[in-house]
Length: 497
Ligand SMILES: Cc1cc2nc3c(=O)[nH]c(=O)nc-3n(C[C@H](O)[C@H](O)[C@H](O)COP(=O)(O)OP(=O)(O)OC[C@H]3O[C@@H](n4cnc5c(N)ncnc54)[C@H](O)[C@@H]3O)c2cc1C
Ligand code: SF4
Image (cartoon, rainbow, N blue to C red):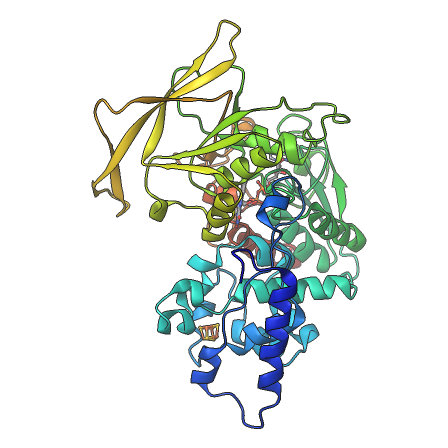
């Protein structure tokens, strides 16, 4: 087989494998389930996808979804469920998928998760449900665990293709809830609160709703049409969405209750303030925060140089600083925007990289050059203020630090230069200070994240918060879980008021 298995080959192998199993009279024994090969995700050929924005992972074929689900041993203790932040009945939905009952399968997922099409694509399953999977543990390789996320994605896509009904909404209660932000935390709150018959208005600072799902995670990982569908589903339920509306500027947070008559507020404003390295040269032209770079590409379509209002200049040699998902997304976007060389510079080793394993593998396949145990020291510019190069320094791993990870230690006199015209800083995000600065009495912690109790309540009566604005930059599923929790307490509060 070639290094890149074609989708046709993958489907052919799966159909053959499934055929053999379906001919059996006896049910599969655990050993036989474990002997079913893990189903590979069909992907676009790396050489082709470097030049397009379309989704890289193409999704399972039906035969694969069934076969992969048959690998599940239906463990009584279901350790995978403990690894899922929203406690999806994983063996339940896999058993239904193994029988080919995709409708029942997605129904089981939706009891716990509102955004399975999104989570099936972007959740870090290898450090959540799949990390605990008995199959992966028995085969001594987490990458051989049951591919729970891929099956989730399959049944969620199946439902979309077969027509999703907007959730039913109870009779109007006369209560009104303002939801600030439109990322996964806010989408979840809006849906769960609206379902109870309360009126919901969502306020979004950008001109399009969706949060990081729209402006951060690129099209080639999460098609925007999927996010758009989720937003349309909210609108079909009767949620009103006001865009270009910055709470703290257009309207003060508490005025929503005092002047506009909302009974409760949810703050889901995320962690959109980029961190910088604070090194020489970071103000030169050609240095971007990952946020700006990705937003310009995803939301403003800067890659469309002929038609975009704010096209991005064509970089030849790009350096991306960082090792998380945001760094991988930036590097892979730079590849697609036509850079000749993209260097990813990370000061620890690949083992410590916080990015999903799949994203690292995809970045490598697409030609991103990895510089591990290296870091930027200074960015160099010319007389016009344009970036011309970056001075880096090499590191080695020292003793473990407080996080348990071995600390990177600079190797003296190991400096060297890389010639680049663009530097993208992707070393993390903090919470945006606007709401806390303009809302007296709203408690935050030392990092500026809003503090909440176990029910998602803030220090202000009637005001709830969740997602990255509470957790710091985290994940989609955690944001969604926080949204569920806050929505439950908003509904509880409104039912007793
Ligand atoms: C590039 C990138 C890649 C990522 N990849 C992954 C991944 O693969 N898997 C994963 O699980 N997670 C990933 N994440 C993290 C994940 O996207 C976030 O944890 C999640 O989106 C947080 O959701 P949220 O609802 O809290 O906020 P967000 O999605 O950040 O949404 C907040 C929204 O609030 C709006 N807003 C902010 N301030 C105001 C205001 N004052 N008034 C009105 N609106 C306001 C913002 O414009 C934004 O639309 C990634 C993040 C980034 C940036
Ligand atoms: S741990 Fe793995 S094998 Fe066991 S029920 Fe969960 S998915 Fe199935």
